[in-house]
Image 1: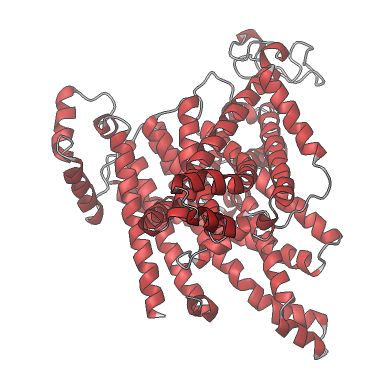
Image 2 (image 1 turned 90 degrees about the vertical axis):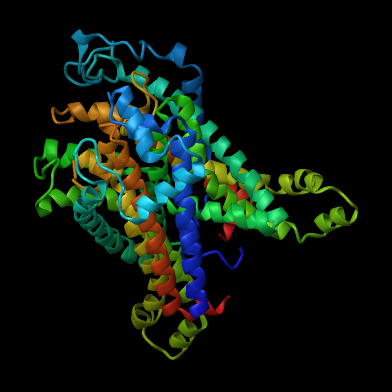
Length: 297
Length: 306
């Protein structure tokens, strides 16, 4: 990295890079969990026993089936409006996965693109992009996302844009660093001597070589993005109700918590945790597999 | 040294300017800012008055000048809900936020540093693996969910601790734990890797060759140097904590800045939201600058490297 990079950021990056985990074998469990969640998201219409958005006020706060007072009808209980928790969790997986994956891709496209431009072109382009990155990094992503959500208003589409805008800086920094070292490689120099245009070099020689890093970063970012999305939903800035986002379910569940309706608080949180945990484990494994350079970060 | 400080101050200043530009542009480009700046339910005449007052009918440059000059004068607007200047509100909430963040920081260091050292000393053994699991869980459990689970267990089932509010030490316990949880994992990981770096260094080898007892090598020689990066990060993390506390403060109804931001959103009180975000960002920039300078003072390798 260049000399202007602050000491603090170097330290912070080391922490953010998950350096202490090395998963040796094939990450079967995380892939299985993510697989189940994706399956639930895709076939939510078929799998969910009830409509997730319509409840029956006569059946409010039913406990899960195995508890006293529970029934087969609501396997994981019902919420404060008498809606089936299981169905809401299944449809919630759809929102988390769609929002999570698209936001990671949006942030990745923006960050990788700007990182390549910044690293390859250098000069004032590099200065401008890196100073903007620094300024955006100054605001913690959650604060920034809250501000954006307050300005442009909540909807599934907006959340994707917000999360993309809040997280592209992470990609830009790492990718730029990679490009700086790729630029010195012989094949890139040869391409310059051979008279290839800058565009061609960036597209044909630089981009394919930073793709692995971008994928690894994206997987690691998935967990962070899902947590942020849940936090926004929890604050009422995510997908608007009555759509069943996990964070929103937690916010609703808080109302019944003092009365001991534990399933409304515990179950959505477990879903968030499983998704984040498996994304982190998978990202870690991918990092070791795909990108030996990132191991040392 | 002077050159280094001047350079860092310059970068911090650029960051602040870009931050203000970003926030200014986002508010203006994503729609009619009058809608955000005017009280909900205001009449057409009121909207016109606001447009006049903020110069919203003029060019962007004029508007930006207006925006920055009020910022510099410390005029961050008035809250619609509280009917007081936002700066006053922010400053009145700051002590609560700092108290919560300090408690969470103390907790995270108390857990993170010892476990990190043990993991480094017993690298690749049972302790180390336990540490990895802990670090992974710390990263994967959202702080507000940890908070909700704590309330469920300690307030609802056991009835030991109050579920919300502030004032006594008992009120502080659960929010500090929920907020510090993630950071405990982060500090543990950094302590571990920093300790491993130091343990591999020449002077630690020398201390061992001299025949010093292992406890002295680790406790006196390695520990001190390994601690520098951890404390540096802790400085930044304290401000980050004030920022990310918004969800935890909402869960526990803790009257800090995060709660102020949440209220600003819930009551559609846009001046509060904008001012809180600007001040929080400025706080991060300034503290990062101070920590960078402090780090260079402590560790000459940093400033000599450039």
